[in-house]
Amino acid sequence: MTDRPARILLADDLPLFRQAIAQLIDTQADLEVVGQAPNGLLAVEAAIELRPDVVVLDVEMPVMNGIEAARRLRVELPDVRIVMLTVSDDDVHLLDAVRLGVHGYLLKDLAPAELFDMIRSALRNENPVSPALVGRLLSAIRAGDAPRAKVAEEGPVLSQRELDVLRLVADGLSNKEIGVRLSITEGTVKNHVHNALAKLDMDNRIQAATYVVRHGIGRPHH
Image (cartoon, rainbow, N blue to C red):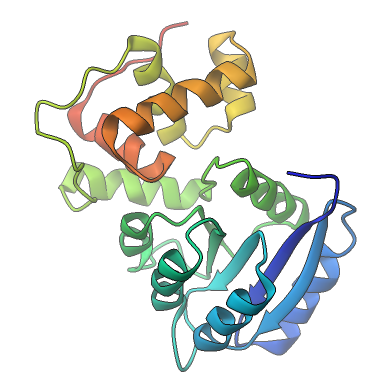
């Protein structure tokens, strides 16, 4: 990242909501809304033209919904951060988004400060998920519906610390919070997450956390 504000593209079919979010984001010195779109198709076209750092997509939109837009963005702009917004913690698209490797999945009822923090977390590759959605994701894991790891069933050899970190990721903690919990630096947490993702051959933290939870391993050490 540079000293310039992070460039944000917003896509939502409700103009009033979209414009209100844009105005709120633009109050932050490190964040800047560079474009808006009323549907997923126009969001993809705008993202290709504007090359934002983060695309914030409403899940339910006309013409093309947020999930399909995210799928296309993962192909067209693999480095862009994608954050999904949904109105319900019972959203049927949650697992689809995890499989796609989106960088965050948030409920629309979060406070403005929480939204800013979640966007910043996505920029740090922390894959933020609203706490209520974490609970639903873990329930899906236990029910066997969550995305399967691309590794063999016996899995790769993860260190105990990597397992500890991923379990706390599954609890929805940020790198900073995990560092405090485990008495290690934020940078060390980031390294553990990076190494675990490489070993698991996975795209993001959420996918890796589902692997750990499904296998019932990696109880945190204190």
